[in-house]
Amino acid sequence: MSSVIDICNMAIFRIGNGTRIDDLEENSQPARICKQFYESSRDFVLRADCDWGFATAFAQLAEVADNPNPDFQYAYAVPNDCMRVRRIVNPGWPQGAIPAGFECYMPELPRIPFRVVNGSSQRLISTSVSPATLEYTLKVTSPELFDPIFVSALAWYLAGEIAGPLAKDAGIASACYAQYKATVLEAAATALNEGTTQYQRESTFITGRGA
Image 1 (cartoon, rainbow, N blue to C red):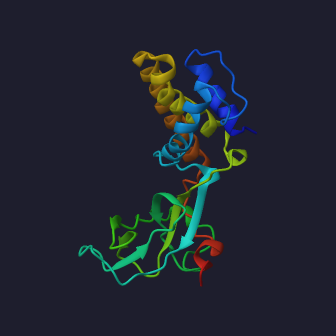
Image 2 (spheres, rainbow, N blue to C red):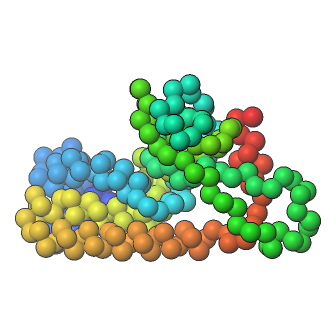
Image 3 (cartoon, helix red, strand yellow):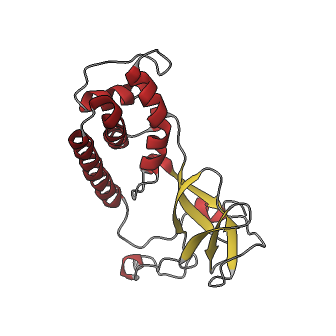
């Protein structure tokens, strides 16, 4: 289990700086710089093209009247805690429509098209289905919930951000960003392997929320 300070120290060490901090409020240059970049770095990595398991959430979307996108019939408010929209959940085949034992022969359900747009006062999701359930990346701020590969990715990205003011070496920053990208690719592959490749009906917990 990592803390914010653990992640910051990991980033500091990865740029070749041996300084260790104990508090983001302490009067030291590494602490001040880490404090400046930590939250934006965390949110950037949460928004990466990776379905972080610990940050997965589902929500029944609230339809709004303001739909600025003429390509889709419906518009919904993006949840306030949403960092990245992943997909509109396809409810799949009705319960009992597929004979037992034949589920694996069903074709993969198509993804429901959508687009994130700006409304008059909030972000919106335009799509062609109603009602709509969203799978999204939740804004998680507690590092105790981060999984190890996310911690590593965040530390690499934060290292790239702080390398300029602390290491003053663009080469170190570039190397850290490269390691960050490699770690995210590894995490995305792991998430894909942990998911099912066989047809399944959506969980009634998912489809029933908000009903």
